Image (cartoon, rainbow, N blue to C red):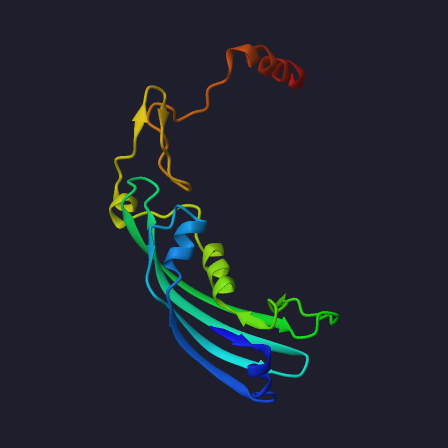
Length: 180
């Protein structure tokens, strides 16, 4: 996924169809130790070439292998990303578009592989759970503590009402006196 700017100027005013499989697993694993592996990444889209810029509209799909946040087992995590990337062919030029990322060619070459790697790294979630871990209702607990899943509806056993800190018990009585 590398082109020279001169090579791309041959397609000025036309769209270039993109449909390639690339291997970025090594780059991903170097940049983020959480990534254990990656399938070949399928990149499709179009490139529109003008005299001032090259606009890539990309659709990136693939699978990353990430560790489960609870069990550390490998979890396949599907990736499906849409992105618009713009390369300005003249360095003094400016481009205004909130949706697109603007890049400069490196020398006379446009290379999409580092950009695709960066887009994939941005898609990695903070936590991934395997099916086994997400179905497990036996979460760890200990003396006066328990792991609680967010939005969990059941009350913690033995703690159905909120206890008042004994240091603040006198303050609670203050408001009762004032009301009467």
